Image (tube, rainbow over all chains, first blue to last red; front, side):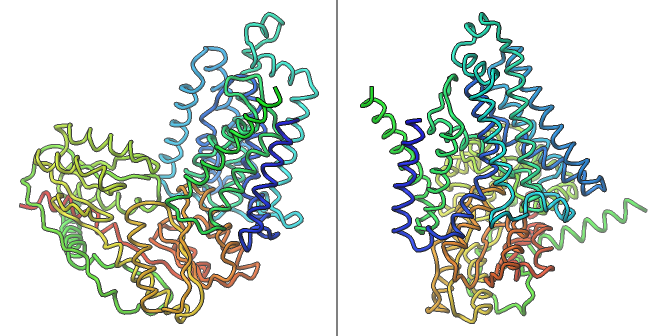
Length: 306
Length: 309
């Protein structure tokens, strides 16, 4: 709770400064743009937080999103009904998630290496199947899925809210949520307590695979094009946001809401460099510096409280 | 009969490629619904033709961000040219803007006895310079494309003059906005894009001193980053008269731009290059035009030049 409060304060300070320092930051249109562009990352973050708390890593998310979107796009362009294409894309995401889960949780292959290879395979297939030319021009009914506006926002915000609410409830109010925390904290203890950590690992990877497939499909709907490099770098941004939100890379710790607040900070700062007209050569340095200050200040506050 | 026909086509293609790429193809081609203005005053440096005798092996096209649809035509032309002269050719390099990966591949190509020649699309001239020197010292024909190295140690530069491309975009921009209003640019990072945008900004300022030119915004090459950069840029610059998307990725943002037009945004969108989606957006009136490089013609030149006696 303190972490959440700390992040709210940091966000409020940064947003207040930007509201005064720039002409258009504190406008409804800009806030809508910031939120619209982080919604799909929130969907991934919600599932990824569970995976990270459970003590696992998945670097294949960008690749799974790309290949799911591309397969959907190619199917639609080849005359397959878009509803069937969506199921195919989601099934592919689930399948890759199960595969990741089995090789990491069951065969104990290092999660970083295992999912790195899956990522490469997925990206390779996406590029190979499309030859870098994104399938585009999808049916209007399919485009509605991501382009419909709700109170001025893209409908994607609803999907993000649903993902955050459901997975927060699972994490904090169900037995499986407790098992995820225990398993991530100490796998041996979890097994002694009768928790099937292999099954849990496969479930968590499958969840992330499903969400990654969903994100690839929604990006295709939003852009009316399925790019093989649709969300490059999203995985690392999501991991960074979860860690800013107090998540531990070694498992056992984390919170979806805090992660979302970490993601808000990152997106606000990304938006700020454009609002402030900062030279592209300095953008990453500025982003990294502010995030470093945010993380350090949180650590210092924590030490003071101890 | 079939063989004779294909030989004829190949011969014509070879001649056209060499002539258009080495002499006339150095000026950007425009696909716009406008009468093209006079070409920009600067002419690209004409490169010396490499006369390395033909050797066994493979000719490599080493680039970066290889997933960009910009390369599709170039690779097609490169492979066709290689096939036409009976040479093996391969398009290599990282799928993203990973300089270390590009340099690693560079080193491997130079070390490989299979390498017959390298056509390099640079990501960083300084990083590539030692490899260029090494390649040239080993007798591997070293040709640079996209943007020429300031060191000039390569055997040849074959490609578009990015400064000229930027200037030509500026000419069209000036005509489109009647030298009034506010202009912005978006692109991915890279030395060729830096040259291009610098050429655009400086030339536009010189011919339209009253036009306000905003700082460029950059994206990371992914569709999601391009979309968020475009949307944030439009909020930061609500009075933008014209936006020039200086790299080849504009086409995938056509739907977002169409939405903006439906919402009443009047800003003109000038794209770059000729991916299918970009051309479609120009045809549909979503983009006002595209300043295009015909890499289908320019990229085959290094291969053909190496084979030439």
